[in-house]
Image (cartoon, rainbow, N blue to C red):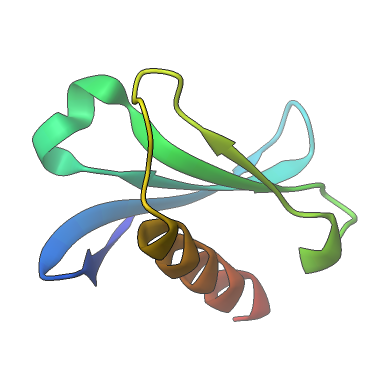
Length: 82
């Protein structure tokens, strides 16, 4: 887990390989609202690349800003390209 900053606020960025499904998952968690779990998760299949990435948004939140999504996707992309 690492921390990244979006508009002056820190978010936990959890990067892990899901051994049961063979996917790599990068989750973005707001530590102040950790009861919600991850806000956004970017998933890449085990043999796929960025072109096969998908995004999931927590059903526990009503919406998320486009700016946050762009930031989260940039962070996830840099970790995958890494």
